[in-house]
Image 1 (cartoon, rainbow, N blue to C red):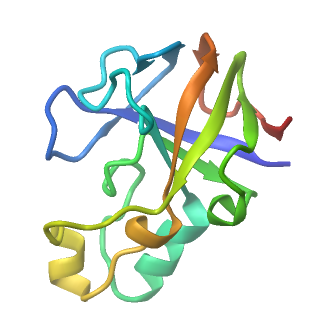
Image 2 (cartoon, rainbow, N blue to C red; image 1 turned 180 degrees about the vertical axis):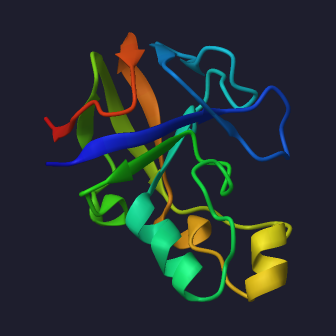
Length: 143
């Protein structure tokens, strides 16, 4: 079973995100209270714990959820293989995959330390189709 490991937000762009107990996913916005929210195609970012574990195996230390600036850390689902347009149920919210990976304009601290970063290749972005609350432990379902 795929599930949500952590929900992470920040109030300022360009910083690590920190875990929260729950989040409200809002249509045409993203996560209420997150600096990256807005009416655009990359409202919420997701990265699998398995991707974070790859970086830890390469020598990354202290790579906890949110360190890659991802909003949702998952486990048990290979996110980057999902086609754009895939719909996911997270808790009571419904989201749609809008982008796989992203261009890295400036290398993050993780890249500078290790010489690699998984977020540009394995992170995905979604937009909110149906509002709802999401909590760690919620199941991730492909709809």
